[in-house]
Each structure stands twice: as structure tokens, then as C-alpha cells.
Image (cartoon, rainbow over the protein chains, first blue to last red):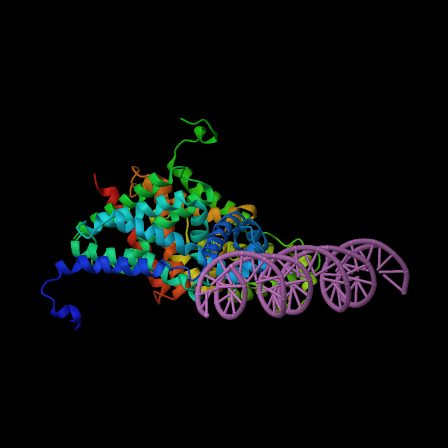
Length: 236
Length: 236
DNA sequence: GATTTTTTCCGACTATTTTTCGATTTTATT
DNA sequence: AATAAAATCGAAAAATAGTCGGAAAAAATC
């Protein structure tokens, strides 16, 4: 039995809702960082750089992409680019942020604490796949180059990527409370199963454009995993 | 009904065994390539380069690693290294081959066509995780840097990585024949679920060294997936 | 609205790393 | 031992990343 702030609250069920909202708010706050630039002009430049970087990185991959190309694509000189980002790596790791933030926001808009964890998980996985389809250049960068990178740990992006799986772990816990996810299996293992299956579907599509319809494949995969978890939990 | 060599064989069951062996032989043949060097001296150099590259890439990652460091580690000049590999990228993509070949061989030794597909799948997944633990530098390179890379498609390595999942797809088909994998779900989807879950476990371990015991985690994950597939198939 | 301060931008430069090439050494062949 | 072939290396070129001081633009102050 743990001693903590929750010990003094009356019931557990009513507590779940605000806790979920707090998690999402926390995640969104961390992923959306305001520009520190003073002039409109340079906030525009900032966006131009990020857009150009997304295009060039998406086309050439991080290692093959050249800073000079990105600067040219953004319509500025290379030295100006260095005014904004200390290195190519820094720039690369900055890109996923913006979209991740947008994704988390649209996910928050699409759900609310009254929904069951089961539905929220289904929506989360479905939206992940669909968002990757809609923003395939960004997804290429995130899923194929940055997520698995050894060095994410050294950047501010790490927390954002961890948040992606933290949400799933949280939903797994709620799923256990709701009774459709077994408590016999380790929650981290369950989360790995969910994340891994979904990401594999997305990655395969990014690399081979198979299956053709990622939205459909993502939804089917999500529905199947949830169904399998339910059946598993219903067994003795 | 397809017309082909198999049409003239008597039964289908006896055919399954050689088919499996052929697949494995094919995979192993593709992954193990002999050196084309004429002198012993340079076959030694070749190995020194690959060993050095594994260490340096594993430590620094592909993009940060420097050719000069690898050459120094191998005890040769950088220009000699270029005599062997046309570029850093070429070198990086050559490394996974040797170990993949070794993995496929030890997998073949650990199984035989008399075993059920269920057991062969269990062993495959368990051995994958265990092999990654034993060769963590190599695994880092393969799982975190090369497998997801956009450019694997342009190299000879692509076929070897595809083989890794091809074996799983083949086992899924046999699992359907054996009746413990449902035919209602797409076999590619089932394979994605299996590969994704397993890889996610390995990748998490490589990045965070969690869970502590990868061999145990890999085995548990494999057993759980198979159990879930069995339950799924047993449902109406 | 002129001047001062801050912010942004760029050209020219340096530093680092990759890659090439011809000369040299080593090994195999006769 | 002479010759050919294979392998190695040092030095220099090519490519790319990254720095710096001052000009230009914008904002703030008077």
C-alpha cells in the first residue's frame, strides 16, 4: 500500500478522469514550444527552415542531406541557418516536435475522459497510423530515422517520444481497471506489444507502401490487438 | 488451382518439410558471401575492418563515426579502407550480413522440419532476442540504424532483412495449416504483429536496457503472442 | 523622425572529414 | 631472381560542416 496524495481522496473512479486530462495537458505542454524569436521575420524564417529541412531530410535522409541544400531550399544562406540551429543533428531532432504536438492536440480533441480506455486506445492507434499517412515525410523522419536513433536520449525530443508510449502505458493501466486487459501480464510487455505491432504496420508502409491503404490497415491492426487482449483477459 | 511442379507429387504434407529446408538453405546462401580477395593478407584485413567498424559504429553510431577512426582501429590507413569499401555507407551496410548469416545457421541447427511450426516460431523469436543480447553492438547497428533506414532498399542487404520476415511469414502460413493461426486475418498482418512485438522488445532493451533480462522478456513475449494467436484461432 | 540598440542576415573564411590517385611495398607466379 | 599482380600507403583534392565580424533591417528610445 502506497502513501501519497491519493490516499486522502474519497474514491478512485472519479479521480481517473482529471488524471487523464492532466497527462494529456502535460504531454502537450512539453511538445509545444514557443519560438523565442523577437521578430516576425525570423519566426517566418524559422518555419521556412523547418519546412525545407523536412523536405530535404525526407528526400535524402539525415545523413545524406546537406545543410547547404536545406538553406537554399529555405531561401537563406547557410550561415543564417546556423544562427537558428547549432548543427544538422539539432535541426533534425527539432522537426518531429512540431508535428507531434499537433498530433497530441488533435488526439485530445478527438477524445474525452468519459470515453472508455478501450475506445481511447483504439482511436489513438488508428489516429497514429492515419497521421503517418497524411504526413508521410514527417513520419519517415520520425519512424525510420529518429525514433530508433541511438542519440535521441541526448536531446529534448526523448521526452516527447517517451510521451507517445507513456500514453499507451496509461491506457493499458486503465484497461486493466476496466477489466479487458489481463493483470497477469506485465504492463510494459502489453504496451510493447501494442506499440510494436502498430509501428511495424506504419514502418512497412513507409518503406514499401504496403499495405496500400494504411488507414485501413492501422484500424484493422488496432481492432485486432484489442480484440485479442479482450479474449486473453476473458480466459481463466 | 495452380499448375506447377507440385501438381505431380502425391501428397502435400510430405512436401512441407523439404520446402522449409529449401527456404532456409536459400536464406543462408544469400546471407553468406565468400570473400573475393586473392591473398590471405587481405582476407585478414577485411575481417579487421569489419570488426573495427562494428566497434566504432556501435559506439558512435553511423553518422558520427569517422572513417579515419575505423581505419586506425583496424590498424590500416584510411586509403586502404577505401580499397575495400567504396564509402562509409557501403561499409555500414555490409556489417549486418555476417552475423545475420551466423544467426540463420544456428537457427537451422536448432530446428528441423519434423518440429511443428508453432515450436519453430517460438524458437525463432526466442533466438532473435537472445542473439541480440549476445551481440548487442551488432544488434544496435541492425535494429536501430540499418533496418529502419530508408536506403536499405538500394543495397544487397535488403534481401537479407526481407528474409528475416519472410521466414516468419512462412511460419505463419504453416501455422494456418496446423490450425492454430486463424485464416480470417491477413497473413501479412499477423506477421507484422509478431515481428513488431518482438522487435519492440529488443529495441527497448537496446535503448534503455529495460527489461533487464532480454532473453526472459523475449521468451515471454514470444510465448504470449503465440498463446494469443492460439486463443484467437480457437474462437468461432 | 532621428538616433541608438537589438536582432537578423550574409560573405568570406576556417576546420573537419571524405575520397582520390600515383608511388611503393608485399605477395604470388614463372 | 625476374615479372606480374595485389595490396598498402602518404599526400593532396574535393566535399561538407561550422565560425566570425560586420552590414542591413527592425525595434526601441529619445
